Length: 204
Length: 105
Image 1: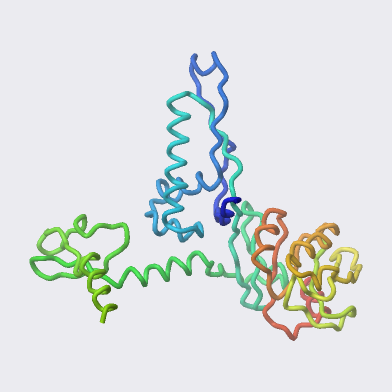
Image 2 (image 1 turned 30 degrees about the vertical axis):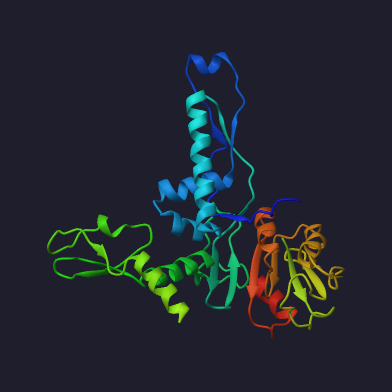
C-alpha cells in the first residue's frame, strides 16, 4: 500500500542562499556528498529558532499539525548536525512545499491581490492604479489569532496572592513569575485533572 | 503586458466569472496593444482538476496577471511558483469592459 500523501507545507520566506560549504584543509581534501535540507526543514528552523515561535504556533503558520512540525524540526536539526560533524555541504532544496505570498487589499476598487515579486514593494493597485492599498490579513494570521483565543481558556495562578494571567501553550506556568510577590505560577486547573473530570462527565 | 480575465460570455459586455477553473471564457487583454482575445475554457466541464487545466491554457499566452472572483486551493501555489499575480474582484456585477478600463488607469 502506498503511504499517505504528505500535506503541502507553507513556506513564507524562501531562503536567500542555496546552501552552505565547509571550509578548512580537511574540507578541501575529500569531497563528500552534500546533505539535502528540505525547504520545509529550513522554514521550521527559521520559525522556531530565528523567529522564536513555539512548535504550536509555528505548526499553524506552516499549515501542518504540531506533531508533524516537531518531526520536520527534529529532522532539520539531525541533518545540520550530520553536516557539521562530518564536514559535509548543506544543499537547501526540495520538499513538499508551496510558497505563500503576501496578500493586499485595495480600498478604492475593493479588490484583493497578491505580490509575486517579493523584492518589490507594493505601492499601487494593479487593477485601478490607486495608491490606497493595505495589507490584507492572511489566513495564517487568522488561524494564529484563533489559537490565541483557545489559549486563553486556562490560567496561570500565583499560589500566594491569587494573581491570574492567561495560559499560553508551550510556556510552562512554572517558568512565569508573579509580578507582585515573585512567586512561580501554577496552572489554575491542571490538564490531567481536567481530562479526568471530562471523562467522568461522559460516563453519566 | 498581458492580463487574463475570467468571463461568463464572449463579448466585452459579459460579466466577470466568479470562478477561475470553471469559467466559460478567458479574455486575454494586452494593455499595450489593446488587443483582446476570447478563448473558450476547455476545462470547464472537467470532472476534477479544472483549475490546473485551465491554467495551462492561460499560461501559454504568457499572462502576468489574472483577474477572477476566486482562486482554488490547487491553483494558488501554482500561480505563486509561476510568478503570476492574482487579482480577486469580489463584485460579481463588474463587466469585462469595466475591468479593462480599470486596467488602463
